[in-house]
Image 1 (cartoon, helix red, strand yellow):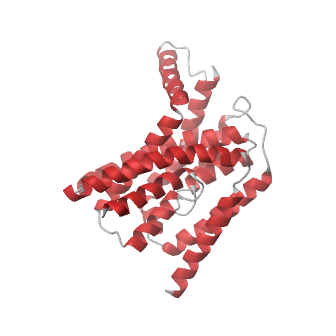
Image 2 (tube, rainbow, N blue to C red; image 1 turned 45 degrees about the horizontal axis):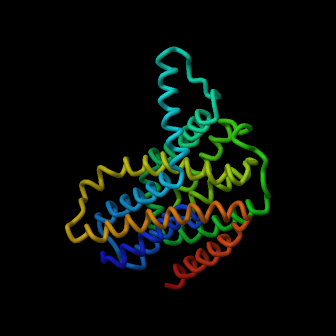
Image 3 (cartoon, one colour; image 1 turned 90 degrees about the vertical axis):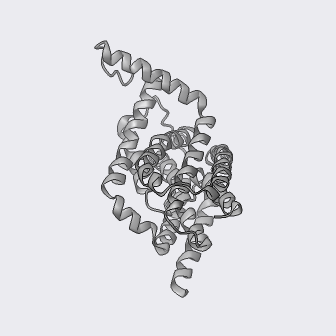
Length: 277
C-alpha cells in the first residue's frame, strides 16, 4: 500500500465514520477498486478505527472525563453497599445508558461474526445498504425535532438506539446515521441524538478493535507499511474530529437530506456497476 492510498483510506475512514455515509462501506469499496488485498489490511483497518477513537476523545473530552470520574463514584457506591443508583445524576445516567446501548451490537457482533464477514465481501450488498441508509436519513429528517432531553430519556430508549447501531454492522449502513436516526425517531432533541450517537461509538469501536486485535497481531505490519499506517491513522484522527464538528451543525441545521442524495447516488452506482461488470 502506498502512502497516497493510506492517506485516502484514512481520510475516508475519518469522514465516513462520523458523517452518515458508512465508513465500512466506503473502505470496502475503496479496497475493492484499489485492489488492496491480503491479511495485513486488517491491521491497517484496526489502526484507522483507533484514529477515529482519538477524534471522539478529543471532541468530547470534557464529557468523557466527567463519565470516567462518575465511574469511580459508581464503583465506590457498589463497594460501600449504596447500590447502582442509576439516576443519581446525569453523568451516571448517561454512562449507564451508553453501556445499555452497546449491548445489541456486542451480541450481534459476537454471534454473527462469520455471517458479517461474508457480507463485507459483497459489493452488491454494500450498494443496497447505501440506498437504505439514504432512505432512513430522509425519513428521519422529515420526522422533525424531538423534545426528549437526557433527563426525560430512559434505558429502554438507550437499548433501542443500540439496536439501530447493531443494524449498522452491515457495510453500507452508516453507524452514525443509524444511531442519530434512532435517537430522532425516539424523540431525542437533535443535540442529544448526535451526542449520544458519538459517545456510544466508543465501546462499539473499542470492542471491535479488541476482538480483531488477535488476528491483526498474527497478520502483523510489515516494515514498509509503517509510514502508510502512521499517515492513515493521523489523517483519520484529524478528519474524524472535523467530521464530528460538521455533523453537529448538519443535524441541528436539519441538513441530513444532503447525505440522503449522496448515498442514494453512490448506492445506485455500485449496484449498476455490479450488474454490468
